[in-house]
Length: 504
Image 1 (cartoon, rainbow, N blue to C red):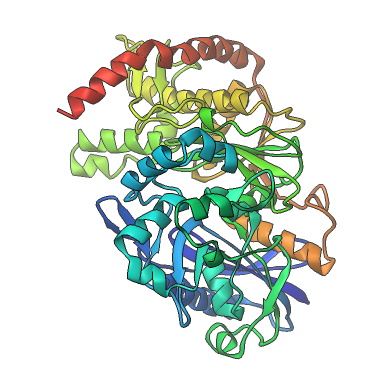
Image 2: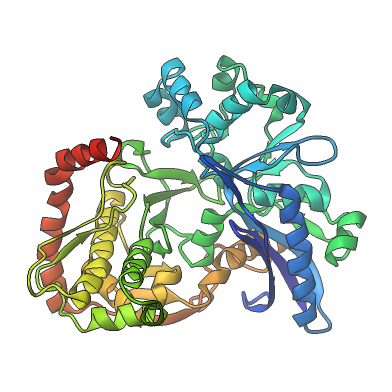
């Protein structure tokens, strides 16, 4: 049997999966690695990614059936990393997307180039999280390390690709997250880099996702168990792979990720960048298309906060019983609308549909009827209402169901609330943890001739559960949504005042 090996180099670990020509995952393995944080710094060791790749593959081979023929290796991984690569390996740790050390450099960019000009070039907001600001930080704070670098890699999957076959490449989806790609031309923005005194020659070669970039080397074969000489296909950033892997690789198909943070995203043939609304415009794995993403800083994290809150006011023995199943049972016992209780899910500010770092979560409408059940349901409803605001901001002509993935999608009640709030069917993806690996395999499989396009067959993307909207609930949520959308504007000055209090 022919199979592809799909490697997903994620934020906490590497997943390896065997994918057959029907898109089925027939075996998988996983290995973790640590993240190092210190204040605003967030780093990982690139060699830890490589070791975890070997460990995940070792676990994979133990499960794999006999008689397999590996047709190639497909990759996906975390994006917007800053990785300095020398002649022999990484020079120091990788700086991750969530690292915010380059705040001064981000301000320097705004002063020297202009925030509006930078956003117009890349199609996305430029902040301390962007690679461009971190590159400036390295030039100013680690010049010797930067001078020793031969290549600046931009994603964890790019580093593992280099370890597998020596290629120094990246895909267009990953490149579009960095602030270094001119979105309209699909080329590196070399003019801006030269203006800033940065060397464009350090950037990796741009490759379309799925292009063959090399073959497994002898050394890599020894560590991973992969056959020497097997083709390595250009990987794709995790958001691009997930978009394809859940079945949203074609225009008009909308999907939502409901994890600790969250987003709505859709493939588009054409789209105007809207960084002022917090919308990220990225290149699709097919670089002639786009993916627009409306992010939410805290999504499922709102329910985790409520769980922690309940635990903190209970004795240890009772707190051990406060899990997500209990919260869902509590929420299910309250009526739709939570007896007029609204929740704003902005625990850490928000990015879309408005950029509001000072915004905070709050309950509006607490009364004597508001108990634990109403609070739990209001959190679920408020988060779903925020996703409806994201959908209106994206302005997608939705032609099918909302495809839902992420840990929060495991809650039947939450998925039903999404269907009711959005007045659209919700399809919860089966095996969502393998969506990125499946997407990477689907992209590479097109190169091999296994698959045609991003929708090979109607049943290619397994669905665990389907939820249809309740018209009566939608009518109620439609009224609540009108109130929900007013609240941020009405509370904006209050949030600013509270921020000043927090800052002393």
